[in-house]
Image (tube, rainbow, N blue to C red; front, side, top):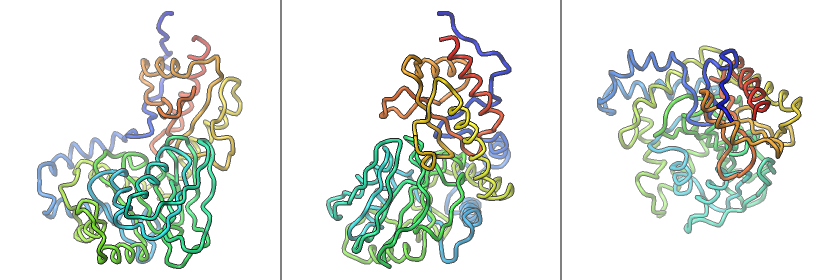
Amino acid sequence: MSEIILPSELLPADGRFGCGPSRMRQEQLDAFAKQGAALMGTSHRQAPIKNLVREVQEGLLELFHNPTGYEIALGNGGSTAFWDVAAYSLASGPTQALVHGEFGAKFASALAAPFLDKPEVIQAEAGSRKELIGKAGVKTYVYPQNETSTGVITPVQRVDADPDAIFLTDATSAAGGIDFDPLNTDVYYFAPQKNFASDGGLWLALLSPQAIARVESIAASDRYIPEFLSLKIALDNSRLNQTLNTPAIATLFLLNEQVKYLNSSGGLVWADRQTKQASDYLYNWIEQSSFVDCFVKDASHRSQVVVTMDFANEIDAAEIDRVLRANGIVDINPYRKLGRNQLRVATFVNSDLADVEKLTKAIEYVVERI
C-alpha cells in the first residue's frame, strides 16, 4: 500500500491532540524566550522566582473562584508523588476510593500503605463510573475528576459524610478546563501539563481549611513522614512562595502564562465553554458516524477534556494513528493498558475547534483509504 498523504486542507494548524503533555500556545513559548529564559539558573530562594510562585498561587486562587480560607500548596514531583504525599500526610482513618480507570486505581493503591486502613474501593468497569457512598466512620474520600485513561468524568461534589471527613479530587487532566465549586472538595490537586499547558516536575493543590487542619494534625502525630512526602513541609514552604527543593522553573513560568491567559479570557467559565464546545463536536461526529462509537456509553459520564472512541472491528485504529502521525497529527493513540481498537483525543482548553473539525475530516479520509 502506498503511503497516504493528507491534503493540506485537512491538516490542523496544530496537530497535537495528546492527553499530556498538551499543546502549548505560541505566546507562552515566545514569553519564555523573552522573559522566562532569564530566570533559568537562578536561585529559587530569591525574589524573582518567589515572585513567580506567588503570582501562580494568586492566579490559581482567582481562577478557582477565591474560596475563603483555601490555600495553594505546591511541591516537587507530579501527581504520582502527590498520591504518596496524600498517603503520608492526609489519609487518616477508613478511606473510600472511587476507581474507574488506571489513575484512580493507582491513587487507591497508594492509599493501601501498610500504616493505613485498607481502603474501600468502589470499582467500576472502564468506560463507566460508580458513585461515592457516604458512610459513618469514613474519614477520607478520594476520586479522579477526569479519568484520563478512559475519558470518564466525575462531578466535584461531596456525599453525606462525617463532619471531619475530607474529600480529595485528583484533577490533573480536568483542572483549568472544567468549572467546579471549590467548596465541594478539600484537596483539589493536579500536575500542570494538561489544560495548564505546562511541563512536568511539579504538583499543585488547592487546600481547604479542613484539609490544612488534617495536615497539621498528622504532622504533629508520631507517624513517620519522609521529608519529600510531607505536605506540612510543602505547605510551610508554599507560604514562603517556594518549594522544598529547586522547582522546575520553566514549568512554573509556562504555567503562570497559561493561568494569566485563562483569567484574562473569562476564567473557568470561559475555559469550560471552550472544552465543552470541542468535545461536543467530537461526540456529535461520533454519534453520526457509521464506523466509530463512543467508548463511554452513558453521556453523563463522558469527559469534556478527553474523548475516547471505539472503531469497528474491520477498521484498524492503530493504522489510522500511524498514518495520521506520519502526517503530523500526533498522540491520539489509546491508553496502552486498555488494549482496545480505539483512539483518544484531548480537547483541552488550547484545542482549537477548527483543528478538531479538521481532525475528524482527516480520520474520515484515512478510513476511506486503508
